[in-house]
Image (spheres, rainbow, N blue to C red):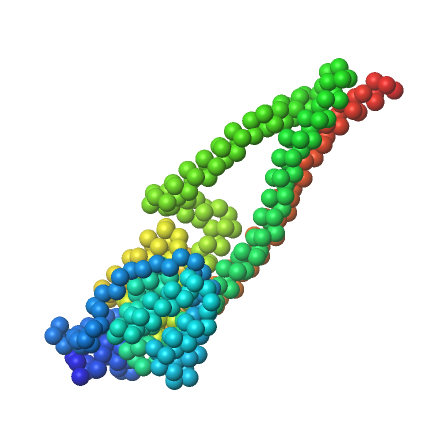
Length: 411
């Protein structure tokens, strides 16, 4: 048995400290929770009490990346491993079974690396830690908690549910934006063909008439001639702008500026805040219900925030909570935590059901984000269509005006 020091919250405001005997950190956290407290920080009382690694076990695992592995593959892997471990299959054998079930080279390589690490004495969490691009800190910490508490099957099941929910949300966003994006592509292609191929052939007829053309027709002919003669310059300019914008977005200043601009766009800013609220709340709910202390859970949740501005706001929360602030008090400084969310979290904190409170916030936020997304799509689709129809209509009118004038002259 090891001795652990702990700091925990008794209700939303009172901080208690003490020591507790347990086999490992996860068991210590569980005992603190069973005592009616919410753990803030749990650590070994003596550094020498830290358990030694087995012979042949590596203290550090090299960070490796495997290209060709998609997020959906990680979801399937987690679900397969969860089912096998739940069926009492040893983890090394479970990994061998998962490896045999795929024919894709990238996945076989990934599974082989994890299997080799397990075979050499590493734990599953250590084996996964070597692939940071595929398995986040949140993922690895949950697996480590499951290993230490003997509830790996339950933790993997929660992870699979969490990742499936994330994939579902992303899938809904992409499918909803597919229609406006398709309209935009067809509209751009139509305008390009009209300007570079159709209009130059019609203008030949106007030259034969020898009459003065309307101003709008002259403007359109000028644009068409420029497109027909210098389309490659425009294409190079567009590619250059995309490349320059991508490079700028890759810098910290550029990413922050773009994220701030997104938040200022009506409806889109609200949608981003609601999505981030749902993601952070879902992460915190999963971690806290998996018996992770609040400080570690908040630090892991911070890395899941994708918007740089909102991540900066949230980064102060773990420090404030570790210094004794109530969770709901620290979260009030985050603009994307609504008053409704704060109220639910406050009740959860006061009743000792903080994980359940965060899960309720996640459920509500995801539903509201879905409603905002439907509103956005219902507006973007017709707006893009109106712009394309307006441009094509202008071109048609500009081409028909000389013909109308000619008919008037003949009459």
